[in-house]
Image (cartoon, rainbow, N blue to C red; front, side, top):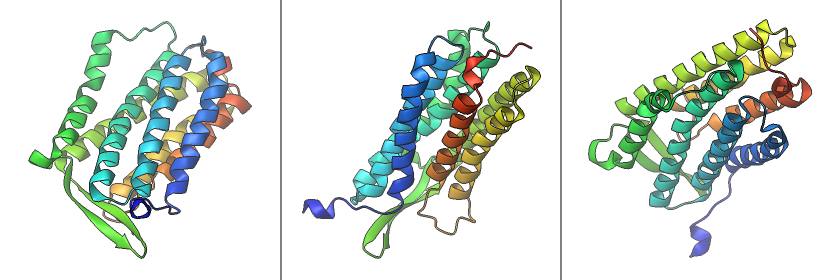
Length: 239
């Protein structure tokens, strides 16, 4: 019956909070859309909203095939998020720079390849080497094991986060901004990456649990602090 197709667990809450927080941040930030980097930032928020909805759906659905579809949809957003963050960092830090379409295509090469591999994973298992349904009392969760392609794509994503964050933090720090802004800029992606690393690592005490949404929620709170409490988007760095 329909009651067997859905469940509600406490693991759903972080994704719902991420979606809500991003939606609020989007509505507040869109008023600044003419400022450098804001368009890329809004795109980032949309991607995060879609990701959190897919992630939340995976925790709510109980059928294994439905869970796998939600996981694949979430993976698309996961691959696009670092690119959007990198473009935002570059556009904001260097407002005079317009990223050529060729550069963007190169940036997207690994993410699009990973998305393609995820869509055809059943033929090669390069993204997910194995997946299973784990029973947790009255609830069920998906346990994933990761393939070589997944770790290559993840390393690329971390690299984009590191490079983009370094560029942005340097530019903002040189412009004489409040030190709390720089701290928030650096801490936000670290929170996401650390939570993601824990989720996919062998030391994760709950292999069926994805802590990325928790890290993402922390990051959003930090970014909100930087944007609206300390005026990150109100002033263009001059370096």
